[in-house]
Length: 216
Ligand code: SAH
Image (cartoon, protein in one colour):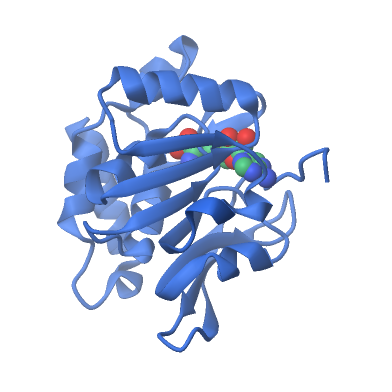
């Protein structure tokens, strides 16, 4: 596990200009150090859990590469008092990292089996500040809005309007934008205190697609 964290720190040196002015928030590394990624992957992937790469979690989905989890969390700049919306619960690994850093996490997952597995896993591990829902992240979670921060862990073809609407003033959305099967741009959307959004592409990433629910 410590090897994994050291590896992440080293890889993040390569993109250190993105982490300015203060470098990577050490609370994020502490939160990741406290987790065993083997708890979040199927038995046949557990011996790979310490590697800094994405791993299959069933249903054609993956748990993200730890360096990317650290990077996205850094860009989100979570603060303890905040309420965060995560889209794409998957294994619940990113959810667990966020849970350690903020007051409340709302997490949405389109694949019912993954949502149920993640809820059982995180409940068993003792997390008690997470709300789970099965649904299409394109629509967000209007009843619980506004959120100070929103993080999307699957690639959308465009920034979904409802997510920008559900962001509080001064809030921030981190989302990979681009076509499926291609490299996407990890994008930061910031809403200023006057409610005006600005968009900043940050770095190239590769994510599974943010799917449309069949219900439309
Ligand atoms: N954060 C996850 C990574 C999961 S991969 C982890 O740490 O394990 C992306 C996840 O997004 C998958 O579980 C996929 O089922 C889910 N997903 C895809 N389209 C979605 C949508 N429209 N709404 C919600 N979740 C979606």
